[in-house]
Image (tube, rainbow, N blue to C red):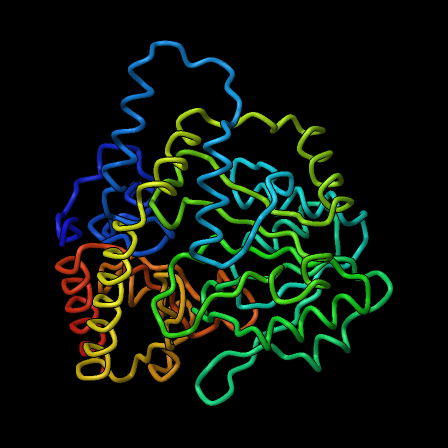
Length: 391
């Protein structure tokens, strides 16, 4: 391999949120951080070189997004997702979470209803409630060992106040990559009722299973007309600290409403190094990504085999997309509080509790496998010892 993902890189003196264990209780500050969706791999060297080259120029003033910035993103989306994006469709946000909140402000009014599909990335709920909207849950259901959308429940919960549906695609934390058929049915339901789909596709490049990611807006003309797509290089290339994201909106009316909210809040200017990093990542980072995906698949197989053979009371759901396997710990028979303590206090592992993701998260834990394999194996061995101690 041209890139080394086995190297253990010390992040403890970099103000890393992931590795800031001072927030943990006394006695747990040696826990291995396997929680927030942040990789413990060096970003592509081509990205670092581009940042250093730009940093060599000593003035870092207000800077526009370059034509190459747009072209690298457009080419990437065409190459990786078979989506021909118009340059004018692209709006800016400093991140996907800010973009979610901007979409809530752009497409709904206080008191309107917004649908989410839990268990799901918890900022979805915050974006709804913190902006004075009503949260409507359309929980995912498990059928034949795989999560699916409950379309019957969805249709029952829509009324005249329902204006927006926030979709996670690929889904975090359950790891689903939605099929074109699933997305088409969702679009049909929303289009018929005048509901905008805000599609969070930040993990769209991290496809580790056999499913193909379909950008929601590409499944039909009606999908393009009602979908606002959030994407970024942050998860793909480990660039979250550089504050860069792209919002793709083919519908001119929806785009105008979103851009107006960006202007209202004063978020139009991007981080100069984020722009440089995105351009380098999308134009030169594909070989690195292919090796990353192979490494993540290997890590997933290690976890799956280890749990099956040595901790069968913890099961792992199929990981189609993201690097965040969803662990089913219900067979342990523990309360959520005790499950939390088992991982953090007994096993000395810092994961995200399933309850953070809302309805359907009880009895689950979310694991981040984007780390060197030796660290992952050590974590699994610590978990095995802790589970056996309570058996």
